[in-house]
Image 1 (tube, rainbow, N blue to C red):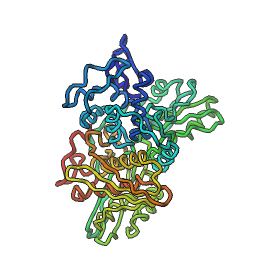
Image 2: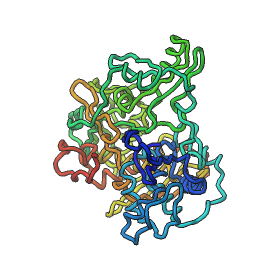
Image 3: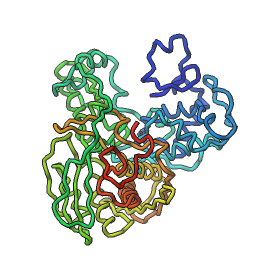
Image 4: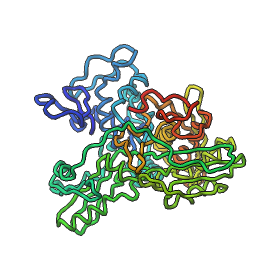
Length: 502
Ligand code: FES
């Protein structure tokens, strides 16, 4: 849980030295008064405000402390919250005050809006929303996330079951060293000291566009760059000698980023070598350096939707592009950079679908799974989405995943990128440097679900593509994504969104 209360006030635990809190009272999510904890957890579940659940215990602690009520322009919500008790709110929260309270947090899954709804639901004093089939909700979550996923109030409390949760306490710990091997220690601290690595920082290097657009006369062109999947729970696994390693995909699909994670194989090998249980734990910097990225590409299209795409050499990417852009000629090129993967959410087919739809001036996008989605962006930036993906199973979960996909699409088009040097080494090593849109940068997103007769299929990927088309079109189809990031942005594009890079 990234956030705890220190004498009743929310503090980010990971940057608070223990000596600063000597003699003070600390409350974790487990120490909240049961009634308060359950009310918030239920509200998160009722509104779909938690998917993998990695970010939500910290967010819940932030919101349960109630300080966002004081930031509201409405009358004050009362004195600071006493430890273990949350007063009944006296004011309706404003979305802005909740968004501002969330500045210290990052949720990659939900697209924030459902978290705002959870805060509103608690403030309204309404009870739990009955009548949901949580097993059906979990089926929808699995279809959207790609791996089995729990749905229930406990997930918001961090009890979704993460990869590292069940590791034996006496397991050795292994972390990547700086030479491509693994440093092993009795504790994480010892292993990190043995690895001798220096923690990464945000770089001053700007992202670039590594592939040139193919030669030709094009009606539309696009260059993209490396983006980080930015899943919150970094890769982890553990294994007993001769045993089966724990999956790093514990409660979420990591947007395809953990498909080829080294953690389980290494855990099994080291457990056998040492004759003891071994935990493998990757830090954020490790996941950026070692983990796969969305393959950068450069494309030119003619008015009829035919054209050429040059893309970073990646197994399966040509087929992915061809699945939604059959008229596109694909050339794979070798470029210096981090590993890329066609398993990253929508890689290749999304860009091709967006290019074809933009060239033909279409708004509806059909995904390879058979879903269709359409998105519009108002003048004030609000996004409205229509999605059809068979039997909805659970509207709350489906809406949450579609909202999260819209948030990710906006980031992909506008702000997400990592800087990579000429040797192919990533320099943006902190989660704040990936350009993921914060709550304050995320517009209202409404989702209309059109129930279909067919079986349930993934709908959020189609939504991601539809919102990417709408967002790109709203910007005037500039030739590079991200459109709003960095000094190297092409002239004529919108200025950086305030605070997108923090
Ligand atoms: Fe927020 Fe997954 S639910 S990061």
